[in-house]
Image (cartoon, rainbow, N blue to C red; front, top):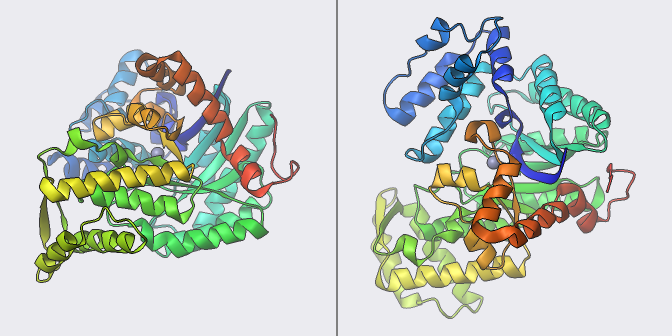
Length: 435
Ligand SMILES: [Zn+2]
């Protein structure tokens, strides 16, 4: 056991080769999921024959050689394809998994028994295709095993956060089910938004988050975490930063990744970005609304001119060169946003290895230098071939042991159980506290 608090990890990103073998053995894998994902990322079909040749999913013991073969399919070792490559690795696991109650019990049990950290928050997202009944059955099974296992591993704690599907209206009814089941659980502490960001602007969730925050005041509260600003290839850095700002303003308790905030001058210098005209229009309108609130650094003449240019360009891709007034506007906006986030005391969950593989770099140093509140997570340790201990080693190597210690304390202070206690003054008996 170590004394670390893991605040950002996904349950099915914590599997061992043995878990994966077990999944592939018990039911026929749905290879079409992996094949489609692979084709979408690399533009050619994957070769799965080696899994058969080496009888990876047989009852036989997994030798080191077999483990390496299996790992080639789900360990992300390049940075070339970013989020798409990550998704394909995860889809390998998804194609083997059915998330039926038996599977959820076995997998959760294995993962929690292996848990090294004194406290871990695991996130889990179910397929957007399942019905409310199926969602409820799966969630009940998961929560039940978490509650049992948490008692077994005491004084360690294993908490559960449900990542809702970003599609409307799925998250609405999923939340209602989570709320019901959470009442009788110590382990289930929060909700999250994860998965592909593109196409799901945070502003669409504004009313929903408001409702959850209101419910939190009356009922047993749920922590709200939100993946944002991690994958934004379809928009300009300004829009990606706006999405983060909008998420922060909604009042979620922690945001995850927010890599776009580290798109400082060096990263945008002389670059041309693209986004659809609707997104560009949203950004320009957003600038105008900020001006109305007294942000006089915004050049409204320039914005109005840009808006006029857009008038006949619905749905087309807009080219936005980051130079001159556009660049100045963006850099001022970035500074403004970071300032708001600091004043708001927003907590950012940062996952260095994950960010390096998916986004090409880790914004952690920038966050620390900017005085932002950060905590650390390993994200999907088995897909990224890391552990939380390794992530802290990385922090130590780039920022020194003092900063690493500080972030370690942050993880403790910003863990869901503590935040719920802080924000809602939750009585000790309704949430299992063992500090
Ligand atoms: Zn994540």
